[in-house]
Length: 222
View 1 (cartoon, rainbow, N blue to C red):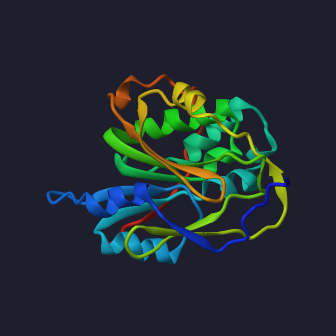
View 2 (cartoon, rainbow, N blue to C red; view 1 turned 45 degrees about the horizontal axis):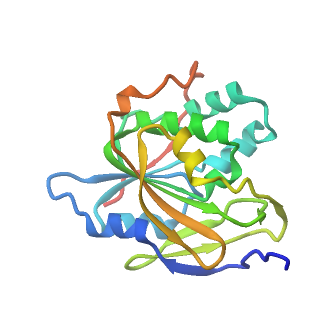
């Protein structure tokens, strides 16, 4: 039987988003990194939760710089240095990777997470959706946080590509320090993970030489 790609918009109740909605930090504002496409809906959503939101349109930026053409691990590492550079050196409480990992090789996942660890602290949660289907859309979905704990996702393409179908054990082997907090199987062939950083992010392996950093988008919400 042929597997079908969802033709969005569709939505679901997110266990990972629940962590953001239900875990207020009264003493200080929480910080959130969104690695997906910029969205005014998401800016308003996190503003209402008194979060400071940072945005790095990671996949599209890779394509624009040519790194998406698989120029090698060193080029990818340098791209991570540029795209994840923030002048105020924040430590994020929540990182929204959405379905980005489906568009990376496992070695690239390891490099990306090594950079994200340096922007994290013990207890940081990383949201990631991992496809279990053989095919995925040619570009990541556009994810929009809705009222409560719901997430809508939509696609701008009907073109498909092969899915790496990352396995949980392999991911954890490449995501040193992160452990599975929650896992939700969605009806359209994705698993939503909330990974939590349990150890000291300062123990992370060196991801390699950094390129001259360029600015990443920052949105101070609230």
